[in-house]
Structure formats: structure tokens, C-alpha cells
Length: 102
View 1 (cartoon, rainbow, N blue to C red):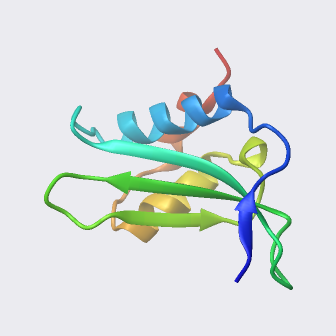
View 2 (view 1 turned 60 degrees about the horizontal axis):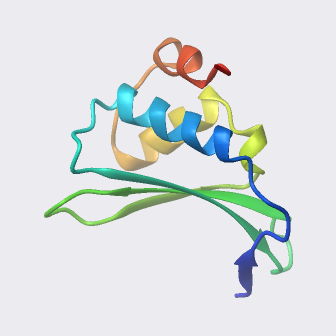
């Protein structure tokens, strides 16, 4: 598998919105880290750009989920997919306003 960082600069403000939305929706404490990375995938049948979102908690295994779309295209439904994959139950009305631009 060949994965490398995207050749273009990711939207840092969108990364901040995603992190903030997940942090607030999941009521995460300050010792939990949310990571958001946009990657280019060179593998056949792979989306050109993927967004990888990680959850790092003390004394717990790391959680990660990839969305097969660029970071700028991530919406509330995508974050519901991430939360569900991680075992959290969150509704769209909770996440949607948190992704709005400031």
C-alpha cells in the first residue's frame, strides 16, 4: 500500500472545525487528542484524497477512521460515520451546527 501526504495544503480551518465538533459532541476531556489528516492514496481503487481522523485517549487503544474524501468535503453525516465506527452514538443535529464556518 502506498500512502503519502497530500501534495496540496489541507484546509487547516476545516481541520479545526472537525476537531472542535468531535470534541464537543463526544464531550472529550482535555487529555484526549483528536487528529485530522488529509492523505493522498496511490493505491488502485483508492480515493485520490482521504481524511483520516484519530482519537488518542490515555490508557485506551487508539481509534482511527478514514473517510474516502477530501477534508473540505467532510460533513456532519461523515462525522456520524466516524463516531459510529468508534462506538459512540451521536445525532446529526448535534454535529451539524458545530461544522459551520465561524
